[in-house]
Length: 524
Image 1 (cartoon, rainbow, N blue to C red):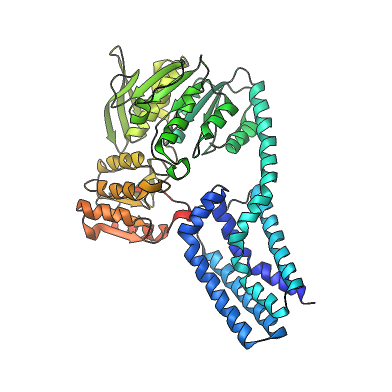
Image 2 (cartoon, one colour):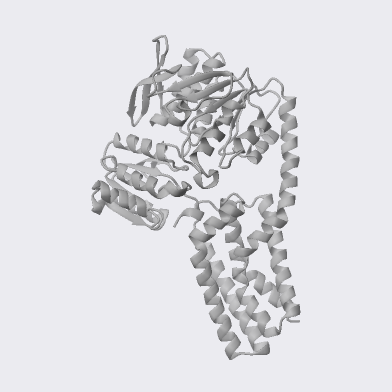
């Protein structure tokens, strides 16, 4: 008679911690290594404090009660704990909420079974008063149970992946006339993909992988649900944060055209070294067929200095680099967009205009123009297509919010892109305000990069609003070292506070740059 209420209250008490643990596991890409690093760096202290509080309550219960009283007291405290956690969870405003996919649903079932098994075994094997203590401590178990859950669900997830991957490969093999274009880079690949899609769709029935669907499963979903027999071009973004990621995707898709937009110190934590990043990204070109075509941004020093081990045709683009096939010159920025000329090696110049801002966007457009020319598009339709290219969401996207002018560069900031966005902000009218939590996932150089980022804000921004006290400490150091006006440095805890402060400090004539938007796992 005591077992059912014990199970129900214990499971209720651990529901919110289970949801939060699964949320963080998802934001860490379902990888135990990444989850462990996050757990240690961001939430270990809170986990220990919560566990310590429960232990103190358990100790008091154990000392002052016995038998049925310990049991009832433990259940009451567990129910109160669960209710408080649930009320607090309702108030949470997550930047990226838990996406309840089929995979997450399977994980919820396994977590519930694991918790239920532990509770039942405890009920059978322990005295009643100890069972009550476990009911109270159960809310802390979820964070640890992620590990056995991941191990138990791994064979299922691998089988599901294999089935869908094989189906996607079959679809690609059946589509023999499809022109496949692979895009990778440490940054710029999503923007390049969107620009290329808009330009090529002027002449071809083209499909691109949506959003940031750049993993094996994201690409698989695109192929299985969106690729049709009448598509002529498939533009496939390929992401990588581990050695062999690009190699795996190249063996999966087999593109005839490959683009490397840039290389830099992104995902150093998982790649291990910059050399590993360079070698992996350049697999995009080295694994092309001999009759394929590789497109390289020669402004990037790592690409420029790399010796490609492939005899396929290489087309080069650049802005600062002069000895390239396509070069953007005479660049001008304004709040309305950009103007530039494309210079060819024979001295010819072709004028272009675009709504997009920033040197890296010009570079992305230049690469898309090069691909378009390789696919026999004439200059006039290319000019019209570039003029119509829309802003890529959260990538130097100019927008009006409540009458205020924002430059939204909130997607996954990197050192090169962050500095380019500062250059754009510098040229904007009115008071210039930057809102940022800084950059992450840069390994040992993360503090240095954020410190340099803070120093670079001098004379490009008038007010700096930094989100996250711990995360932005190096930025504050850089700002102070550069001589940035201290009264114009503001550190807040949440994005909501940052926006509230923006509306206090800014006028409708000012410009606000939103630089990076960290997921909840990294906002601290």
